[in-house]
Length: 275
Ligand SMILES: [Zn+2]
Image 1 (cartoon, rainbow, N blue to C red):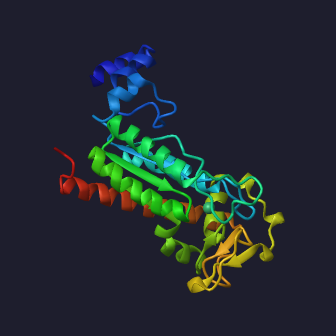
Image 2: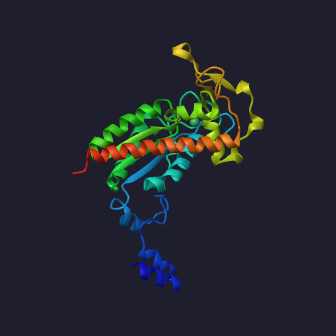
């Protein structure tokens, strides 16, 4: 087949060449792939799908869609290495104490649960064996996703993993910034700055746009008074440093990649849902 490939390249039938050597899909995005190509790859050659989920809510001086932009870029970076497809991003989620801010958007928990449950069923029915949710948004959404994957996994006998990247990458935050992070803090701002630097606006930033999260249930405010919530007082302010942004983006993705690879390897080793 190799000599045929070389031959047809030489005579210019590039399309035929591609058709002859279909080891890789022409795209990893479910939005872009055709049903015919999908059928050729899933699940025979591609067993894993990455599903980015987030929400729309204020994030200091970075985009309202930061929770969608981050896991989507992460999925694009990791999909080739994980041999995974990328499901369309779920851009709407459960926004809580930041709901009152301009441009924020909230889906009810009831609607979200039903909708995400159907998305997970759809991915399982399309043949994926490993469904990996890359979640960009905290609050109740994390617990709901955890519960949904346990139900969907049992129901469809498909392995499922949900990742909250900002928590997973806590060590990387300390490694790059020398301190803890925050919601729309140094960590999230850097990650987004590396993806869409033109949509990060340092000139609009001031330190009084930040509030440390209350320790040990000491108080609660609704709406939360700042869109930048610091995990610890005095730490986590955005740095807007392009080099840190690049380093952090890469380190976070390495951490997420390592976790997904490890979990899939161990699922395989245990032969879970392989019968
Ligand atoms: Zn966020």
